[in-house]
Amino acid sequence: MKTIQPFGDRVLVKAGEPRQQTASGIYLPDTSREGPGEGEIVAIGEGSLLQEKLGVGDLILYQRLGGTEIKLDGTTYLLLGEADILGRVVELDQLAGAPAPQSAAAVA
Image 1 (tube, rainbow, N blue to C red):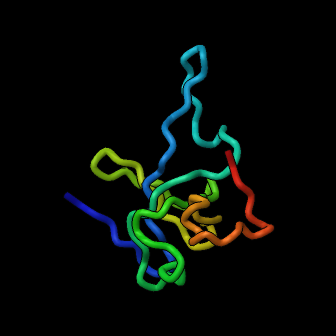
Image 2: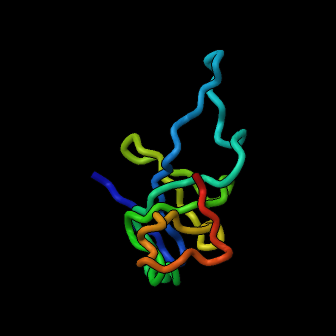
């Protein structure tokens, strides 16, 4: 089994969204979807400042057209730079009981 270790400020992410299909059976490409993508961090480069804030297994939001797509052993990964990562997906109860900041929005 192979693995990829990102260098510098790069992060390896397993894409989390399956392909979408219309009612008539047409598959929509990623570029036709709106909003950011969501994925799970698989590895973080040693030179990345994100090591202090993110860890392997964290769910993140990323710019949909950012990064480089890589297929390895039948799984699709994205190699993203720090600038492509928009934020981390966190359950409200994981915020240690602290009230949500005014800038944070709860998404249902």
